[in-house]
Image (cartoon, rainbow, N blue to C red; front, side, top):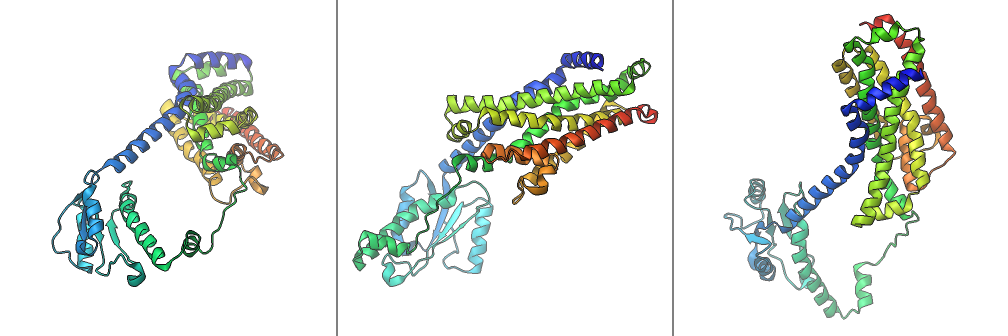
Length: 406
């Protein structure tokens, strides 16, 4: 068994494709995801903030001060004249929508004829803003910046007329104030936000790390014609299977170790070198013990993946067929992780014993700092039992001639 493992693992290390999936992909994927995500988000936000918005105002005569403010901000807004839109009718609304959808305008501001700076006399004004708010355009926020200046001005004028002091003004604006006292610490808040997504990437990377060697050790052996040589050796069949299984598991475990180490390493680099606030907070809260527990929980998970992948590879007629089977397995892995991300699903009761989902929930709890360490027994036990069962099935599968020589 160990001779088979030693032989297969040496051949594994000579395969460039396997090295890429085992080492380079998990080592570089996390910074690439964060880097590309931050780059595109910052670029999109900057573009939306600096883009000159084309607009039209209906009812300019009712609020000349507001119209003048938009005109003065020529570096941010460009007024476009539109015809046939003097009243607030259904036809006009359809016309506004058409102009905005065909990108002639970015927004239309409709000022009512009752608009008056003396709000004590006229009451609340409702200015209609027509825009396409489906994308990241920041139209509402940029328009509100100008309107809010006049809103504060009219508000202050009304308070002065009423003779209200600052305390009375605040009480009138907000008679009852609810002060939220969050008992959750910062680690729990950040853990809840990002802890649910990490198992998704970790599971996929571990699966990818074991996928290439598994396909080669089963279907690859069939294509090369070397499987028959192994079968006629005096070694027991189950030892052959276990040797191959441990090779695939080693590839997955190395990928898991590099993945967890990569998370810690790049977290430290980002927090120390780039001073990203949320990374600094998260990395200062999570201890080395938590990363060790995450890695240990991945060991039986990788064993489950290795047994399934090796069974599929043994069944497949060719390397290509094995890859198609294994590609479909990704959806099976994603589903338990998605369940762990659903509201109300917690690491309690029966969920402790649900394979893969319990590991995903445990990872989130470790990041939150709310882990019930007694639950680790159920997590390791359930995952290990399934892994052993799948290994036994793999041995049974390998003993069937009709499967080996399909």
